[in-house]
Amino acid sequence: MSKKYLTKCELAHELGLTKRGVEELMRRRKIPFLALGHRTVRFVLAEVEKALLRFEHKAVA
Picture: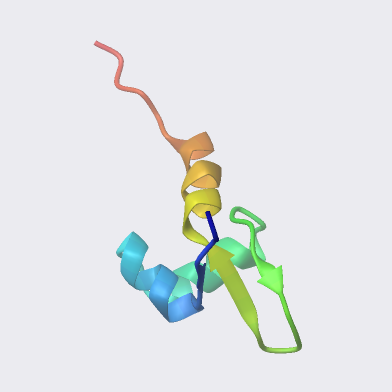
């Protein structure tokens, strides 16, 4: 199975964030990304979602 690489804007759309929100997650090293050049970065959606699950809080009831 081949991986689909997303741009910042595509990832933001998939996650329901703004492009700035994605950039903030990158800056804080919360999500994995591939730096392909000075301005070019790509993301694998499955890997980003897996990384974000670390911050999920379960309800206590």
